[in-house]
Picture 1: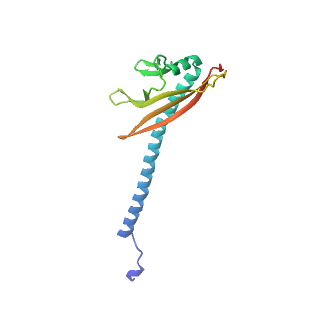
Picture 2: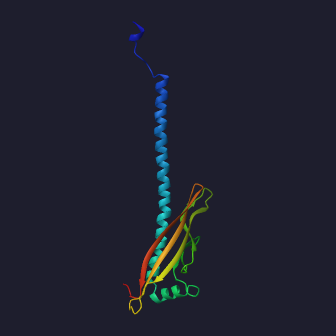
Picture 3: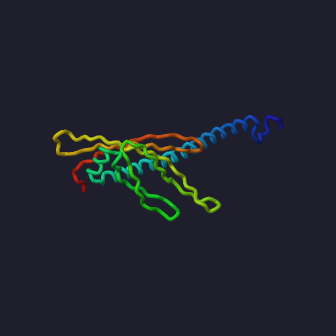
Length: 181
């Protein structure tokens, strides 16, 4: 038998190197996509929490009598917007007064997650959020319907793996002197 008629066994060094390179490229792509998906999910938790908190404040403001909102708009130094928040502590969750003031940027610290550590202690992941309520009286002269446009500007800080980014959004709605049911 000649050497040309023998069957080849195994792979050459070049074939192994090319296979390894292809595997490495695919692995890097999969790892990159997995990391990006994790970052997007993490970012969405913060964004959804910020919107939920802002929506909660807007719903509370909508339920407050018009005269209270009007007073708070006309004289923010004297009248606050009487809103509430939930407070999380060792004794559980409780409702606390958490007033807003027109045209004042107010810091809110929102608990995103609580994780139990190996030593049994609890560690909170807290998101910093700033809310600035703004108001504009839209009532026209001799108009029987009184209307205030309220804008809640809110910012939140996304902190992820040593990286920090500020995000800003707004929520607008109107408050009228008509009783809503």
